[in-house]
Length: 374
Image 1 (tube, rainbow, N blue to C red):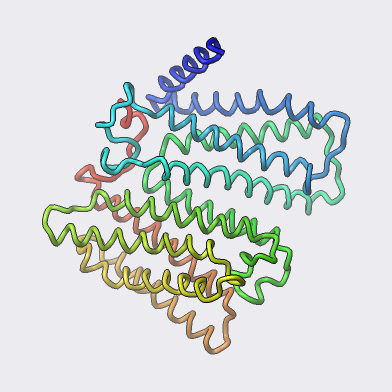
Image 2 (cartoon, rainbow, N blue to C red; image 1 turned 180 degrees about the horizontal axis):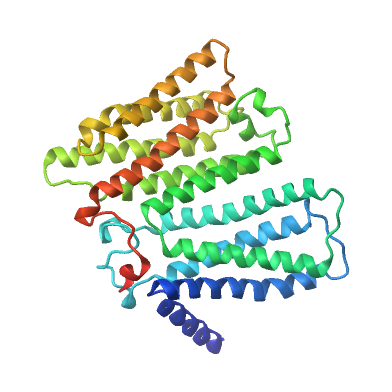
């Protein structure tokens, strides 16, 4: 046991040394992917030996790749976070793309982000398997090629999760959020037990009677948690020298955090069990977003005017969608889908705009892993 601990510590030190330069980062990520393949391929071959597998369904190659990929993603993400730790574990050094120790990622933030990576792997491979099933109807998968495919899936998952852990910045988190929302939403749509769910509303995917409810609701809860994380750290670089600036930063951050909390509560309270609460938090999220957009020119007057105009246009489109729904021109699903895309695309543009606006002061930017540990 002691020998295993020594070997693990030595391997971790090697990975940390590799994580200090851009070229070595890719090498370390490739090593993580190769290790996932080396471990995953023989185990898969042994499990699949002597059997023909289906592409989807319980015990299928898609199911195995998805569940194993989620585990691999979590382990690779944790390894990446350990690799980017500063030498000596100093708490006085800024990490990632954030301002400094007061604004560093906490353990619960990292847990939510790691869970998002694992969920992306789980839902993503299930979705890919579903598409392959529709493309190769009735085709069996033999043990050896099946093990290779699963090993490749594990390797790709480990590579992406490892790199993602090394490059956590407000911008990268916003892109992770976008990918997670898209993968989670489409997976819920593909696995829905009600093919006519769209005739009701988007929240029908989260009803307890729908088989897609766990995927849909967990996607919303984790996405809301990530939004609150992004809100805290993306606004950390905003000026706060005067009382007015501190108030503006606090209100901006509070608005974004409220949007994230309401998004998570939409998943916590399914519409069929908590109708009033569900609709209240869903409507509240849109209202807080509109108020934040309208107040932003006064809260953060230094941002480009084009960005303010974009926000006004988005709010106007959301209001117009509400009119279309009230008159029966659009159903609620269309309104929710378009409004959701607009709100979260605005959040991503906001993060990018703020990052560029405060970059000259060195507050928020795309800090590389090498800069974070050097």
